[in-house]
Image (cartoon, rainbow, N blue to C red):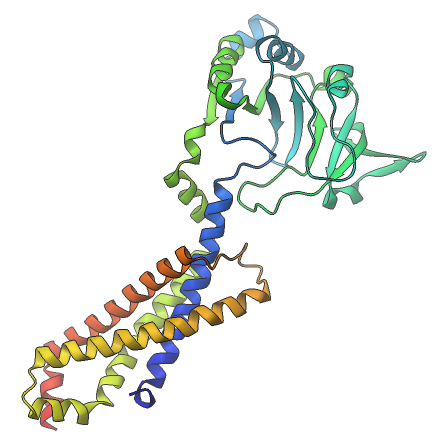
Length: 351
C-alpha cells in the first residue's frame, strides 16, 4: 500500500509540516501575549489623560501635579508615559526601577526625588547615544539625558519592551515638557483599579487597557493579530495543497482498483469499501504527520524570520494533529462524495 501512496504521503507530510510550524508559532505568541512588557504585572491598566480638557484647564494641571498626587495616594505604584516610538517615561512612588541590565544601574528613588536627567537605553539603541567628556548622553525631544544603564529587552515579540526609559520626574520634563496629556500605564498590583479611579477623580481618564485584556480570548486574539501575516500565508498554502490533494486522493483510489474489485467480488459492499478507504487514508495521514512533526522540529533550527519562536509541547502536537486530521478528513470525504455522485466507483469496478 505504501508504494501506491507515495504522492499522498508526500502531500500529507507537507501539510503536516506547515500546520505544525504555524501552530507552534501561535502557541509561543499566545504565551507572549499573556506576559506584559516593561516588567509590569498583569494588573496594570492603560489610561489616556487629556480627553476631559476642561478639568485640566480649570485646575491648571501639569504632569508634576499628577506625580505629586500619586505620591500622596499610593505607597507603591509604577506609572509610565508611553509613546508610539517606545521611548517611555517612568516614575515609581517607592523603590527602584531596574530592567534586565547589561551594564550600569537602574533608576533609584533618589533619581525620582532629585529630578535627575537620566535615561536607560536598550542595547540596540545605545549606538544612538553620544559620549561627551567621558559621559554618555542620549538626546530626546531636544533634551540631553545622561545614560546611567544599558538593558536587554525581553524576547517577547507580542508585548514588546520599550526601547528606552527616561525619568518622568526629571528636570528636563518639569522645565520643558510638563504636560499631563498623553497615554499612560499605571501598575499598583491589586490596587491598580482603585488608583485609576482616584486619578480619574483628579484629572479625568479614559481606560484604554485593563486587567481583563489578559484573559484567554483576549490573549488568543492578540496572538493571532500579531502573527496574522504569517498565519494567513501558511493557511493559504495549506488550502491550495489540500485542494490539490483531492485529485491525488482520487489517483490513490485508482491505483487500488484491482484490490477494490477483488473485495467487491468477495461480497464487500460499497459502504464497507468506503470505510476501508477512509481507514487507510487516515492511517497514512497519521503516519505522515509523525514524520512531519519531526521534520518541523528540524526545520525550526533554521530560525526563519517569519516565525517568532517554536513550542513543540504535547499541546502543540495534539492541536496540530487535530487540524491535520480535519484537513485530511475533508479531503477524503469530498473525494468520496464526488465519486458517489458520478458513480465512478461502480464504473471502476466494472472495468
